[in-house]
Length: 474
Image (cartoon, rainbow, N blue to C red):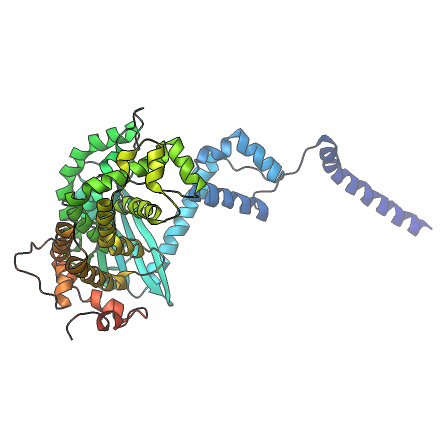
């Protein structure tokens, strides 16, 4: 009996201890208080990582997000047990940890890659801040990999020195000097003036302020453009020399960026295309009306038609506007001229001559626009597209000049001349004669690199078909 009594006492004591342990939880339940996840709880870690990766990094939301009362209330509703991590912890611990992890990943990428190509790029944002980026490209286990190895704000008068120093720093830090295959550099003058406006002739009116003074660029942006032009021009020659210096010891590995060189050809031509300016200005005004005129936009909406917005720094966005308006005008179901008459804009009606000029203009630039888009791919190598694209553009322009150019002959000739002056080295490789009078631009000989011919040969899309099916000599 005594033994049983002692056993019962022990059970009763253990029950009291359990009840004592449960008291805080019972009290919390009645008071509405909820126990939070601990700092090492998997759910706490998962949610914190998601806030940093998905909201702060991917969406670009500010670090102060975690301090905003609305966000804290939202997280309480999403998961009451989650304890919102402080901004101080994110700044001083988590982001530095992510940075170290990223650097280790990049080092592993460079160590694993047998061969690496680099892209050196300078660009300017809307606030006229210039940046220099170095991107590494490699094929590892059959997969194309591309990572930014460096991203440096360009400030002060020592821009050129900083560019060269950073390039050297990347090469030595990741020990890739002996692995370099090619170094792709954009044309510096094209990059540093990336925000400078490039207009399709006649499209100046599209970007002029409306009657109420509203412009497509904010006043702040306009002032930034004006105040920084002189500084950009002063630093331009230094940056160009730095590109040359940075790649001078690379054993002839430097090649130009094809889309940017192509854009320079377009720029050369657009500056000499007054033959189409009057008709194109009509298109620009019609495109602008579609965004500013309620009556006109309602008519288009009824027909489920949308005219894209043109961007002053992207010539192909203006080209897309021309294509779309021609598509609307050529569709018998739409009466564009009647719609313009209905809103008292008879001066913008497209006449037969306008149609002829616009169709020729679109035909001349069609392959330029297509090549620009396709060679800007960021998920796959695109160097195999360069030679087939250039040959296709050249032969197409020759065909247009001989058969279709009635109003835009001078435009077509300018395009052909500019194409030869900038891509002559590659065209010569294809046994296309370049007249001695053609001006040799800085990229002329850079395109004589055999990699532009080897790449399509190794690409299953092309092999030798792009030459066999062309009019090139045997």
